[in-house]
Image 1 (cartoon, helix red, strand yellow):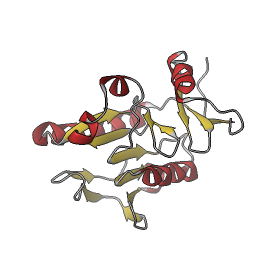
Image 2: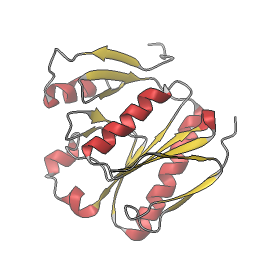
Image 3: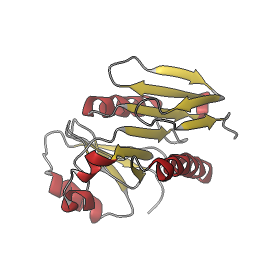
Length: 195
């Protein structure tokens, strides 16, 4: 299979896949990264390059180290699909859920695609990502109950901060981000992205 240059979208708004059918579609096609928007559109995400993958891991590692020290929640990688309350099934580049919310799920719910919106998400725009699609995805997260989200945009050397009930904030790089009341004490220094 050749790598796709851009996300492939398949409009299935008139074909209703149950959550179990979507889960089986993903499990039966492990070589594909598949998401589903709240409107029922399937999005097949292309693989990312080395620089983008490294950035995802670095940001996720910082989140994981903070969480290991505080033990306030659970951290997830980009391979986790969350079944969001608005009907979407999305996979952020990194996510975090407060511990009592995570523990409220049954073991079966935790083993499959968890039916919960994270409290915090990170998305990193890769060279193949359409910015408008990612911005819509961030709004979908907020609509589902995500309290704080960061969209890193190396192409424009900025980060967009999404907070529930507020307009997005755009900061040029370099900048220092803090987890506010969602991730208390979490600080992430973001330098200018190098090509």
